[in-house]
Length: 397
Ligand code: BGC
Image (cartoon, rainbow, N blue to C red; front, side, top):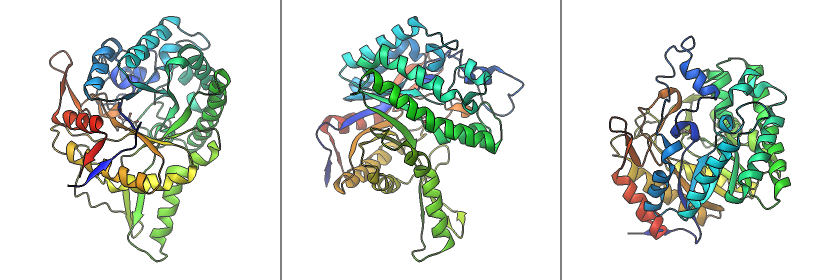
């Protein structure tokens, strides 16, 4: 049985996001969207409510990370809590996150902290959200404040999570707030997010030049079977560019690392999406672990360390998670062998959580949350599998 060893100091962890686990994120645009029945048609299927109550139960969650033998954890902090009114920062909430980060550190976990994970303060959304020309300025000001207040407890700053998913869902597909379907708004939001990252990068570095600041980008792999020149081949190249280069290239040198979220591969045949869907998650997403290796190799050209900041599957019965993890990690190890500077892997997710417009039914957690029994945390079998990998720093093939 071959064994795939990972480099020394490789980071092993899990990822979560504030709105999805904390509960009662009342000053955010998402909370408002969830309550506002005039928008409430089919989606979101349910409001986030108390979520997993991780705002109060974070120590219990970090104990689970420790049981996983992890040496790192990815969380996000909530802009709406930290800056509840434009220009007014909440010391109480900074103290809260200071305690959160300290308790992660006390458990031997390096901290990977996302500053924006899909949710906005309500005040910002009332001013046009990410279409407002001042959004990059607001975001950089908030980022700088986070660096000053919390920077000494943060090992990696991730500015924005999946900017293009945010733009698509909010301005093109319309499943998320502000549900304004308008290509000009989409373009403005996209440009403002690039500018926001660049400004936040400089703002954080102005507090301490050694802070590590990067982006978290979902990259989808696209492939076709035709080897010679064909329109499908051409389309694949365009789609690959739209999935990564269009956002990553304009960041230039203002990016110390790439956080990669990998969930999807798309196969193109005769100019159409035609995945075999021979192995799918509970959400019907095609599981194709080999795609992660291709994406990693394609990101090598940026010459910065890469962390997989999210990868996982909705699998309530935990029947595929172990096999999926094993295959994903074997492909990661192959990408490392081929020279990719991959430095860590964060599984999505530690616990079952609020899956945005889908509500709570998709179960992404290594740990089940029993919503009928006081949100009790119950590790699934795959939890112990991941704990073993993390402890041994290797995966058996
Ligand atoms: C997001 C998470 C989400 C996960 C699964 C990622 O796109 O960053 O917030 O829960 O995918 O859908």
